[in-house]
Image (cartoon, rainbow, N blue to C red):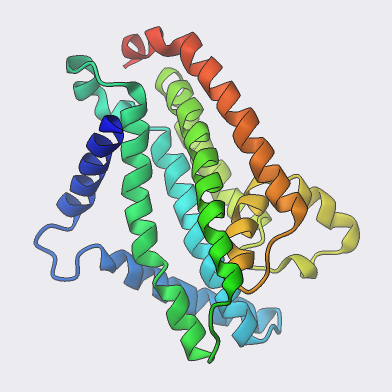
Length: 250
């Protein structure tokens, strides 16, 4: 708990320092995200001839959550490297730096998610009781993102070029994950490969579907739970194996 309080304080300071002396503050990110959602929603909704009342809320949640996952992965790779001086001088647990990155981006997510109720109000829609599923979904999603960050931070500290490769993978991943297109637009024979074997599809669906009135499929929830259990087992073994070498790689 002490580590979490320290990580939360450091993460909050990161956001505050980034937008110090700005009159709008971190809501600049919300404004930028709102413009992006409006522009891409109108363009791709028109291209796919989808009703805007359905497509804009869909792409709104998808882009916000993908931005969150992408930032966590990209910044997670640098969690140790960007804290080199602190790590070499203070004997803080390594997980503190992972939590700092997670909390900093979670604050930004909480700023951006306010766009979603605004989009619903524009189309005269309201959030259903199924949206309560977002609470356990966010908990599971956070567990998954944290174990990914633990493994990537160790690997990228050792192999610095890997950070650039992962950033490119995340850019491509946005286009093969149903963010700007809807799952039902895929041919039936392609959906299994592109959807079922895409972990980010399940991570986004357990958040997006409840917010849009659904519940997510059993496969979505099952994959997210299994990923969390298997991922944390692997992450703990991995960190225990290479913990003593991290400071030498910095």
